[in-house]
Length: 308
Length: 308
View 1 (cartoon, each protein chain N blue to C red):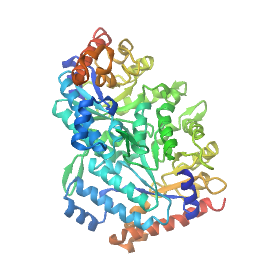
View 2: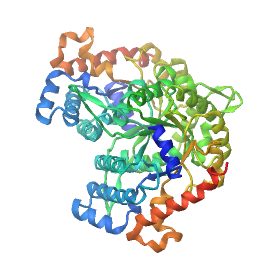
View 3: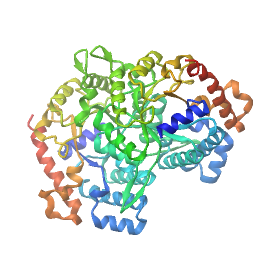
C-alpha cells in the first residue's frame, strides 16, 4: 500500500491528501434539507448529511489526488450513526480508487493496541470466518506509550500490507509543550522521530517504509530536521492552509527526489465554496469549488517539491 | 460527577473500577451460542455476545463498586456493531447506578478534540435540539499534543459536570521509552503530572479536581512522586492483577485520608471464572465468579488504603 501511495503521488503529480473532516456547519443547505427530510432531524439525519457531503467531494476529487483522510472525531461526534457514515465514506473512497488514511490517533498498551489494529486495519475471526470492522488502508497512531503500544499495529500492517503514520511533531500551537522539551539537549520530537525511523525498518516498502510520520506544516525547521532523521519515512503533513502552513515552508519535508511527503488540506478544500476566491461557485456547486481548490493547491505545492 | 465518584468510593469502601474489556475468547459458550443463533455468526452476533456478557457482569457487581471502565478498543474491533454494544454497555451501567469511565485515550488538535469531547462527553445541536453520541461520565485522554488538545475537553467537562483522566505514566513495560526521558533532570511524566495538576485547577470539585490522571500500578515509585505532585488529582490506576501490580505497591497512590485513587481491574474480574481459585464457579456462573473476585479485590486493597 505504501508503494501504491508513492506511485499514485508521482503519477498524479499530487502529494496531496484531502481531509474529510465534516462539520454540520460546512454542509450546504440543500444536502441538509434532503438528509433531514429522509432520515429525520436527529443523529441519523445529520450523519446522512455528512456522508452525502463527503460523497460529492469524493466524486469531484477522486481523479486528482491519491488519498483522502477522514478525521474520525468528526464522525464520532454523531455517535454510532456517525460511525456508519465513517464506514460509508471509507468504502466509497476506496471504490473510487482512493487510498484511505483514517485519522484516528489511537494508541494504548499492547493488548489494547492489538484490538484497535484488528478493528481499523485487520480483521477479526468469528467461528472460522474473517470480518473487517473499519478497514482503513493507513491510520494515524500516538506514540506516547512507546514500542509495545506500537508494535501490535505494525504486526497487523505486515499481515495486511497496510501502514501507519505515527505522530512526531503535531501542527497545533501548543504541540511544543511536551514535544519540544529537551532530552539530553535534543527535543523529544527528534527522539520520537528516530524511533519512528527504527520502527520503520520493521516493515519497508520499495523506497519508503510502511510506517510513516506526522509532522505539522506549521513547524518547517523541525520538518527539515525530521526529514534528515527519517530518510525512509513518508511524512504526512497536516496544517497547510487553514492552520497557517505555507507551500514555501514545505520544501524541507520532501526528499531530493521530490518524494517523501504528502500534504493534507481539509477545510481549505472541503469548505472552499465559503472562501472569497471560490464564492462564484455558490453553495450548490461546493464540490466543484473543492475540485478547483485541489487544482490550485497542486500548483501551489509544485514550488515546494518539483524544483529541488 | 467527581464528587459523586469520591462519595461512592467511600460509601462502598471500594476504590475499584471494573474494566469491561471483553474479548470473544472470554465469553462463555452458552452466551456465544445464543448470540450467534439470534444474530448470526458475524460482527452483529459477536457484538451481541460481548454485550450480553457485560450485562451479566454489570448485574453481578453493580452494588459493590462505584464505576466501570469499558475499553473502547475492544468494541471498535467489531466495527459499527461493536460500537452499538459499547453504547448499550454505557447506558445499562448507568441505569444500574454505575459511573462510566470510557477508556478511549482520545486527543488531537483543538478543533478535533472539541469534536471528540462533544461525541463522548457532551452533545451536538441539530436544528435547535441536543443529541448525545456516546455519553460517558469520564473519558481518558492522551496529553502528547499539549494544552490546546486538552482544554476543549475541559470546556465540555465544565458544561456537563463530567471529568477526564489524562495519561501521565502508563502501566505497560515500554511506557518509559518516552515518558521516563529526563527533561531538565526530571522525567517527562513528572512534567505531564504537573501540567495535569495545573489543568485540574481549571475545574475543581469539593476535594478533588474533575481532571484526573492515569498512573499505572506497575510503577509504584513513580506513583509516590506523582501523588505528591498532584495533591488534588484523583488517580486512575490500571495494571493491578493481570498486568502485575500488587496491593502493597498501591498505598503510595492514595492520599492520607484514604482517598485519591481508584484501581482498575479488567481480566482479573471479568475472566475470574477461568482462574484456578474461582474454577468451582464454572463457566455458566462466570458473573458470580466476577462478583467474588471483586469482593476479594476489595479485601486485598484494604491494606493499601485503610491503614495509612
